[in-house]
Image 1 (spheres, rainbow, N blue to C red):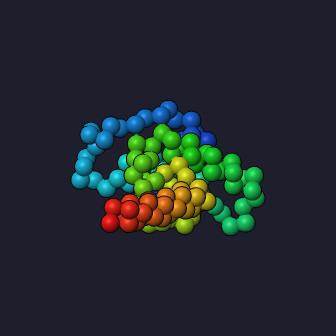
Image 2 (image 1 turned 45 degrees about the vertical axis):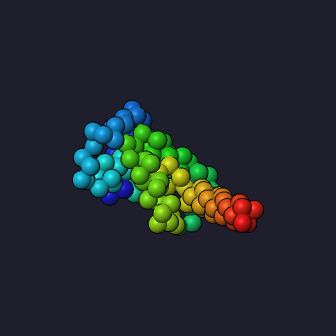
Image 3 (image 1 turned 90 degrees about the vertical axis):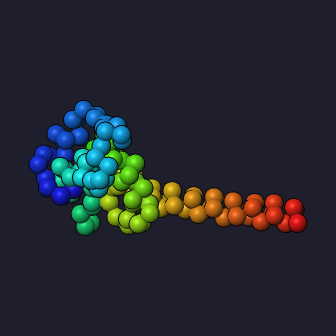
Length: 123
């Protein structure tokens, strides 16, 4: 996302390459290996007043880049923990991340209710 070296169409066509986690430099931050560092930021973040069709097309292109990124999981985890309010991170749009976070919150509430019920039944 930092320096555009290729057009988004050229980058999206590059073959999928994953680096096994054990082969990575464990001291380097995850984002140093992010494929998007070599792409144009405009692919991952919406311009103002972007038409819906253009947004959907851009987001799909960004997701294709994410799909071949060796640190996609780390990126997604970061975006969900922060939480990042804009852009495509870890192959998810901001709206998709909101859905994931809402599901996690609902699951956590249900697990807490179930735990309280188990404790009350045992007591």
